[in-house]
Length: 332
Image (tube, rainbow, N blue to C red; front, side):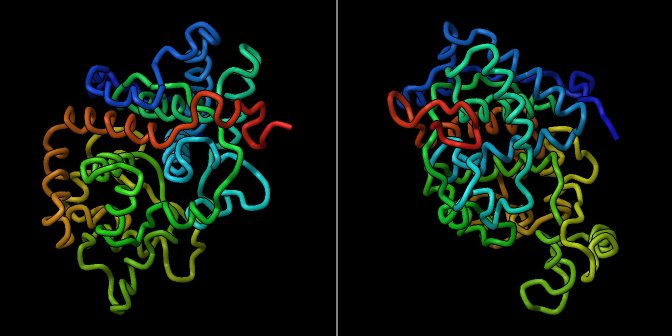
């Protein structure tokens, strides 16, 4: 069914994150006006294409946001995830049959090339599309830093190693974030992206029947939600069946995700452990979940801050890399 973007002004006032809070990222040679002279209509073009995609399928907002995340954690934010061919990151375990939205990126790139050929990187397109996906879903607005260039190689091995898994322990997830310069606050705020989107049964079915080899469901999963999910995702069901991360607010970027965790309604294990695990107390993730649940403005501000930090992971700048003509392949 075709759905229109959420009219976010009806529930929450727009939160504009002041840019001065992020001036520490200037060291990466990125800037908000990088394309001011060379592609002045860039933001309008990307916003139009993302809006069209979200109108056709609201879930696409979460998919485009996830592409930026999964790109930046591997080789830095260099659009290596978009490359096709042998060794593609698309075929890595965390992305295979789950990363999506590549055709939307193709459409954005084509529109951008029609306006300013050979100027804008695919990596920057991912960063802008992720921001617009959040905004069009009702989330906060921030100024995207630009000037990244595109990488020349994919890293499938790195994707299998670096991206957090839905069944991973909290300490391991925190370590993977730390490896790319992100802290515990970033772990919790960026996990809040699961306020929108869907997850496949295969990512959480172990919680429903035989959690960690116990022969029983995950005791942290709320009973009514457990029953619903067991019917949706029986052991014999196709693992590609999906369920919303946020059952009450699946398409709206808000802080309801954190209320879910407090109520034992986190969908995947790596979400629920932010609140329910022993490590949640010692690492401080539990108190952050509680804070974001009670203060949506703090969540929005911290999420925007973390997105800018994530977008600053090892960008290629200057003469490094290239500006791809086609996001799926390096230039001839």
